[in-house]
Image 1 (cartoon, rainbow, N blue to C red):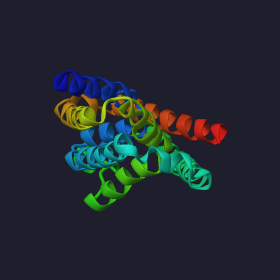
Image 2 (tube, one colour):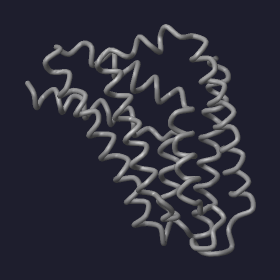
Image 3 (cartoon, rainbow, N blue to C red):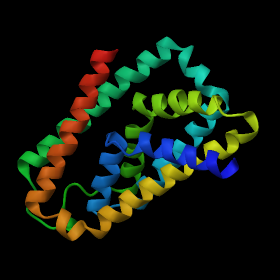
Length: 203
């Protein structure tokens, strides 16, 4: 039962993390530029680990009982994702003439840290996935097996984000070509703006 529950948590965790969203798009972008991509992956995973633990062990109620907090979080996410989407679309429009080392998309570690926290903590979907959905599913598991379920979901986050960052970095020579890079910036911009619009309508 222990292994089965761990695998269940791992599978459900992957199913929620893999669909491309703000976190995945940002980690992918940093990997392509080989620009603090492991820092970004580590921070995304660390935040997920904390939120998964809170959700599985009963913290989901905190989010459900704070409509004002959820509203502020939602509109903060709308503004941040909208800004990031416009930034990416502008980059796709103008393109990059230089190589990776000269790219204006390169950031300092401090900027990557702030942006990663932004796409994670200002994204209500992260809380819905980790606190609400994983939390509600974890609550259906017997109390003695909840640590195994949480561990599986946490492992899924670690495996996914590090695979995404390292895979993008390994394919960077191809992915960073002018046309491909502009296409990725365009895709990231569309995803971010779509999420911002979706959050605004849903609020």
